[in-house]
Length: 65
Image (tube, rainbow, N blue to C red; front, side, top):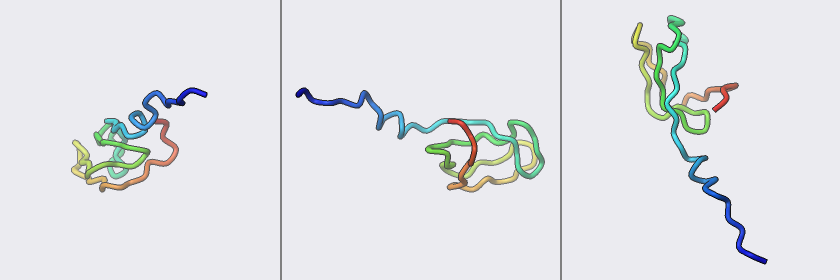
């Protein structure tokens, strides 16, 4: 049997995405630009409209990544 390779599945899993979210405080659409890895924010994210801080480690349930 040959060697089984997983064509970069770990690389894709470890990628960080930039997503724009509705602010949970002022509800500004796309007000918060967040870095997300495995449905969890990486670093604090600040709303451009009201200054609300979405803390690092916030789990974004129900978001398709």
